[in-house]
Image: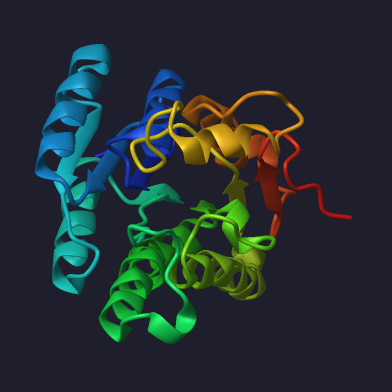
Length: 258
């Protein structure tokens, strides 16, 4: 159990690769205890070993959890509470983004199974993670909830399909509900919306999709997972207590809202 006065325990969904893993490293460096999970067995094993080697096995926990399975989510959060104590930081980064061979599928051709699966993982799974941590956060009078959205949920999508776009856009609505219902209890909820970030989900920087994306980014480069993790780290900190209900774009200037 985490001792009174220690840094809050952090949980990161999709925390074994890319943005999630970069965030785990930052939080652990700052003194937090961190639990990560994702669906892929190989990435869970690799991340668990890397985190344990860098920070000690007593400060990190990595598990394989499928966000399609509410009971598995419940068991994971119960284990975290038993090992570390209740989570004070929740980073919802997990997401899937299926694509057809010719690019995003048209809505008229979208399989209902794909729509349901993406929303189950990206949106319903996020809500279930929130339900698992909010009661303890409310009781303690402190919490940080950060959703990893997407540029695709902020403006006209160029690459992502309809299911992914809808799921990521919906996170801002879920965040606003948390602001309204839990803001009075010291809990903040914010969204980070990355642009084109080099992760296993986006593929090689030499791919035609990434080469084309580079031409639209004023910063002159594709993003790195740590670019996003740095923003998440701030939102997870005590210094961000008056930042609530924000959507922070991390895209190198590709999208600059008015």
